[in-house]
Amino acid sequence: MAEAVADRLLLALAEGRPLGLATGRTMEPVYAALRARIAALPAGQRQRLLAGWCSFNLDEYVGLAPQDPRSFAGVMAAALADPLQLPAAALQLPNGCAADPDAEARRYGAAVQAAGGIGLQLLGIGANGHVGFNEPPCGPEAPCRCLPLAAATRSQNAGAFGGEPAAVPPLAISLGLAEILAADRLLLVVTGAAKAEILRRSLLEPPCPQVPASWLQRHRQLEVLVDAAAAAELPERAVS
Ligand code: GLP
Image (cartoon, rainbow, N blue to C red; front, side, top):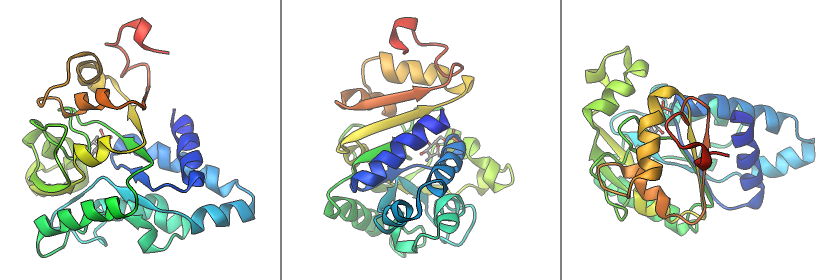
């Protein structure tokens, strides 16, 4: 599945529209596959692709410096920017260390808009139905903003913080569902049995604020890639 996602990312990068990237464990094999795909390109093609790289990540913790390996900037540097030798400016994320996180969220949302919006937006899903860090309840018009993280999210992400939910920053900056739904295309990637129930609710129940990912149904070009475990609660006719 990671290979299928990497294929789509590679095609999207070649199109020249800004790419929307995500973090999380789901994306680790995806970025490994993408690195391998890029390394295998003929030199000229690889150089063109890297020179034209423009991506925006969904979110960042407030209070972590980009150099902090637990920050999403740190994660993206280790996963893509460093191994591919991309200039820092090519991979954009909200600045978690900005003095005024609300102003930084507005700046970041405006930067996405100034770049013409997102072409392909890669998405994972949180166990509570969040996309990016759009925690429930969340409507489809929520813009890029600074917001508190749900207790469930801090527990889910505690692994990078010594297993201690209280050590996970309480605030984050996230692109909103407004910017996400404005992307040309959405690619939702879901793996593992723990996500099966929230995936079913997201895709098959009427959209509602309690399941932020359910608003993705409104997008005209949503592709969902799942493994068998995550698809377990979907009716067979819904899976191909
Ligand atoms: C994180 C991110 C989301 C991600 C989700 C799932 O906190 N903000 O963008 O999709 O949670 O993470 P994982 O793939 O580790 O389950």
